[in-house]
Length: 391
Image (tube, rainbow, N blue to C red):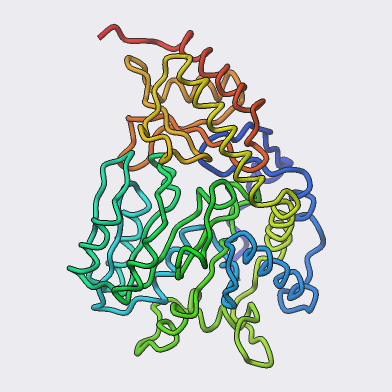
């Protein structure tokens, strides 16, 4: 046996140092002390009864946040992309038709995922900053007869809050499941899973919930479960197979839970506490606070002469604001200046909105008028000191 040839890395001999930063981009958002402290509690086994009790608390919190009575409600071990794949991989079989509303990057991602597993994918496309109408949706449902329709409620790449009313009814009229991405909207804008006929709903832990990234709440209606559990082929992913996940989370009728994967127990602590914080405030108060802060922030931007990317007021996402990139400025210089000078993160566009917008996220504990004022001051300073082209 030869001796070790790779020495211990010098970088690991230094203590870990992480700066404190104002996380006012589209996510992740700042994690408050209560949730940070929860994540630092002792590790216990992922199959211990105490962990199952925490998971039960999480299920109840998700049911409240989603406003659903769905039994099959859980948190996937992973980010929002994991939940998106969980939803698509479990409900769609090769050769089946899928319809995707595309008005930003998340519709594009859903298209990619469905196409990868052999689905026949069609789209309804709306320009960035707008949304598709119910009439357009019904025409596409009638034409393509999909088994699944995907829509993003809060499109964080463009700042659009998509209307949901009536879409669930249309989907069910055409025997189609309704899948909604609420990663950027849940807790910050009204959403009622059961009342609005949503069959699969998912979100992430790192935005309004203010937990670290790494867990993704998801819920399946009985209609969705009937489709999932009557498949003729296995889902392409073992890790995301709902039959295994439902058992691990105690959502089935089996008397015992079977080992599937090692759940991220400390992430479960943080998620549980973040749901408790939301429950303490109350959904309606959280929705109202995010809306009031967004309106206050929008008025401040317009008073500076900046323009909002989403023209229709009711279609503006309260959690993530998109600002038309100021003419003559390099958006990268603006975001870099604000980070360096104010220790504050905002970002540019994503996907089709790259180069068009600046994005500011005020989510969860970050959604306050004081933080809105902080961002406005940073933007004023940046516009004063960053280079402006005369062209």
